Image 1 (cartoon, rainbow, N blue to C red):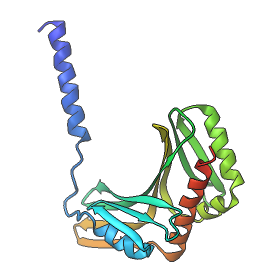
Image 2: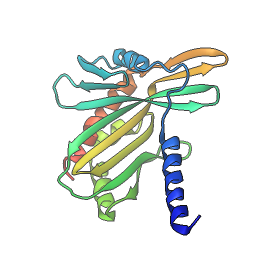
Image 3: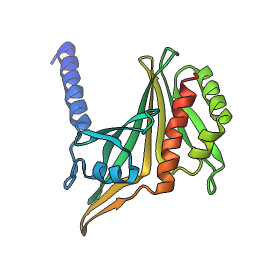
Image 4: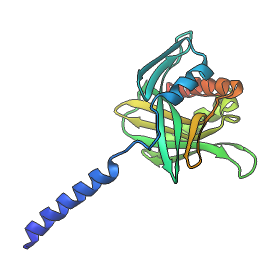
Length: 206
């Protein structure tokens, strides 16, 4: 086999491996839409439309906040988790691409909100951190909020926010067989909606 043929074969192999590992298979026992249905009762929003088994769109009664809610599965040994992601898309006046991760500071007690930049123009990090610190209502909502992930991305002249909460999720075990829905409490629900509204407010000023 000559070098050209070997290079082509390796390229095909890499493509096949990429397709194999990128293919997402639903875990055994996963019931798409079940978690969203239970979350809908927790949120108590008049405007809630399930547009597919794993995607819903919701809005506050005053129409000030529109969001998408998605189910995300995570497989583990003999069990899987169904997590809910709350997503915003907003027009951006800033061009380019960037990615930020927000998390609570402090090893034992929460001491604040930290922001790390994964990619993009470094000056944007300073601007985002300054806006976060200036918005006391947003910080007040984020501090007690129990979230797993909070990502902010800039791409295609849009801000994309994805907040994954610990509540509004489901644990499904295969052996022994059981399902447990982790409810979104009233306090967490209020903090979640206030945090999303605050992030929308902050990003519109960048």
